Length: 156
Ligand code: ADP
Figure 1 (cartoon, rainbow, N blue to C red):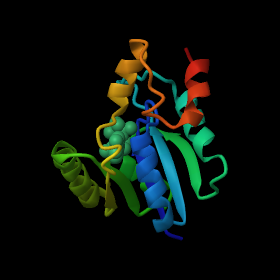
Figure 2 (cartoon, rainbow, N blue to C red):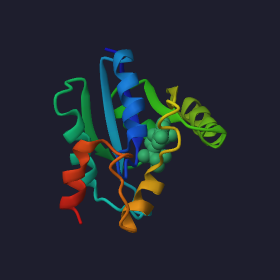
Figure 3 (cartoon, protein in one colour):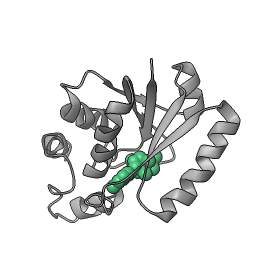
């Protein structure tokens, strides 16, 4: 079985994440979307809400599993016998940051990172911009999958 993990904060899931997930689906038999839980990070949406958002979008996609995790991604990979990490790249800053992490994960855990380049129509989207717009009462509906809007509104 060719499985990968897509780790991230997904705070909230955006159309950028969805673009990467949809394009990775044909490459893997199973894609585990692993929602990071880091006690030092201040998330806008709690773990349960972030899980619900992804499940709302992918409820009919049997290849996708959504889990929460804490600790090192390589440890998560070993615990679940996963050999591939999926990450998205938007720009040179993402590349520089991800390069060091990917090389470290290969050194630490013999895990390969597979990168997909963002599509041009979603490359500008980030969860932090979405949070900022949302916090200030703006319209985020063009930046996130429409299916997550009820979850967001339930968590106000
Ligand atoms: P993290 O805190 O781990 O960076 P994010 O939820 O911000 O979590 O991002 C998870 C992954 O999704 C990262 O690989 C990131 O580069 C990718 N990603 C985020 N936004 C986009 C986007 N607009 N296009 C492509 N990839 C994206």
